[in-house]
Image (cartoon, rainbow, N blue to C red; front, side, top):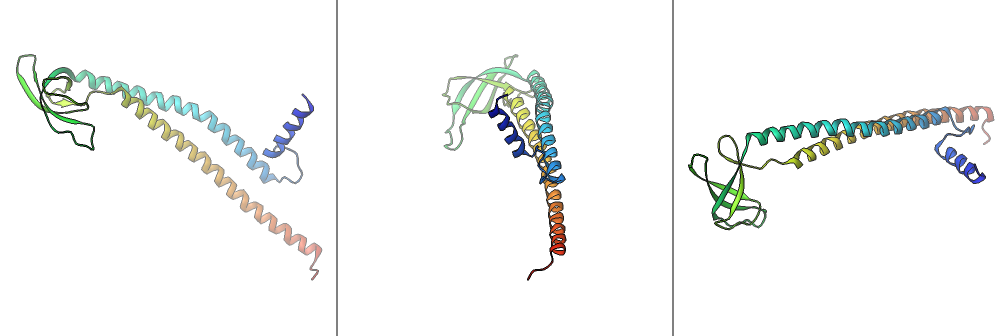
Length: 194
């Protein structure tokens, strides 16, 4: 180790409170130790939360999407008429028509996410009752896993930060009490020089 790296090491230890300064009180050392432990806990808990919560939610939601997809059927329908698309929504109302497996002709209203013209063919998803439903989305499983994992990480962060703030508040109150006792002792020892 060079002299510069040793002095940088000592300077860093002094700044974070890991030196043997006699002016540092027991409360200061306890606060430093607890903050290091809480930081290590956060660094350990963070990947565990991400892996356990994130993967579990993603697997569960993906299985739910696959189960829902298994109950739906995909068909091709022809647009028979279109309505006027509202300015505030990215949808276009349309009337679609399709033939069932047994040749029965069905007509229903459909909200197209793209601009369609009469005569165009669109892909639709039908539920067991033969009603048009939203297509299954794999991104929904990912976004739900991301949302719940972020919530779990935020909750862990708030919990650990709350522990640190509570400890610091308690130690600050103790420091102030000790400071007042030391001033009172010094006042008695030195006396009043007014």
